Amino acid sequence: MIDAAASVWPAPAKLNLFLHVVGRRDDGYHRLQTVFQFINLVDTITLAARKDREIHRIAPLPNVAAEDDLCVRAARALQRTTDCHFGARITLDKRIPIGGGLGGGSSDAATVLVGLNELWQTALNVDELAAIGLQLGADVPVFVRMRNAWAEGIGEQLQSIDLPQQYFVVVDPRVHVATPQVFAAPELTRDTPPTTISRFVSGDPTRNDLEPVVRARHREVDSALRWLSGHAPARMSGSGSCVFAAMVSEAQANAVVADCPLEWRAYTVRGLAQSPLADAVLAYRAGHAR
Image (cartoon, rainbow, N blue to C red; front, side):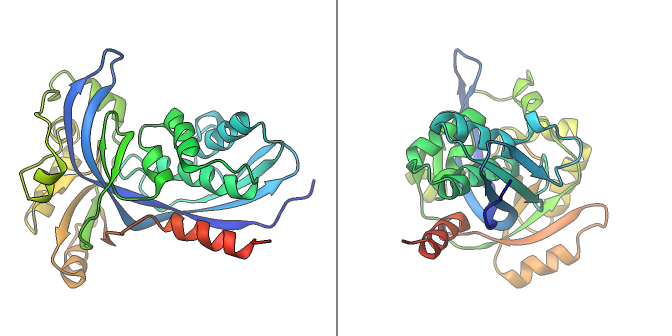
């Protein structure tokens, strides 16, 4: 079997600058409001097209079966939708903490969709790719669309938003938080009054409604939030476990990271105007123009 030349694609993490649960739908899914901010903490995915329909994982994540691997599921979903007869070899270099609320798995899935759409020449537009992504997870569409976004619904109703470029400290307390358990918690606040983009931009108070649930169940997250809040106002991203705080400068961020307790992992990250995946798509097309 002959493999095509491999190409490298970025899969960035995101922060939820806030997350409000404003209701619950009849199907059990929660209605949310949030802002997605891309950051320069990035997984790297190497893709190569195959001439058969097989999807091969190279060095898969430990204890993750192929049927649960979002990269594999994304590739197969694109195959089914387009009736594509190609396959793929997928290598994931994982840097984004797993189960940290930074969207790593969703971003990986989106990058596979976007990258294979180019390699396989399936020519789907961004709306069609986002629709496939939504079948894989509520956060996948924002990564497919590659822009910071205000999000509503279950996270799939997206409106691009310009955000100030700033540095953050992200602390990973090295614990995995199971999102379904957080949303199933009986004490979860589910009736936060809806807000608006203009009120968010003007600085109206926001919060992460999932944070109290996670803090009560994971002392490591509670401890990390208490520690980081001693340096700057901090909150949890998504359903956790990672917590973050905005910094006035890269130097301040680096100083906080250097002070991080050894049992945790801390990162200095920069907010991005858009996903680096957008640049990767442009570079790929420029290199393969006919």
